[in-house]
Image 1: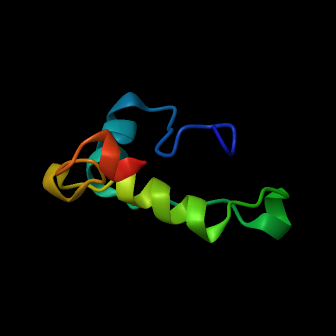
Image 2: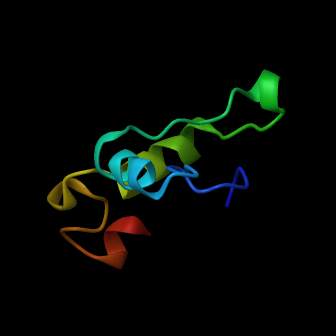
Image 3: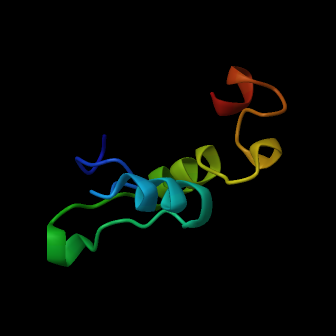
Length: 67
């Protein structure tokens, strides 16, 4: 929602599923794309999209952990 496309979007459905399972989240270059994502927002997104579900933000204490 911050940059206009999902974090693992790809035209090829199989490639997109692979990216969801294996790839790290990347953020646009602020100078090249004129989109700035703050370090705090990047940290939150990375924690919410952790590959191992037990490591995801909210996995232990639910919504309270996220808030």
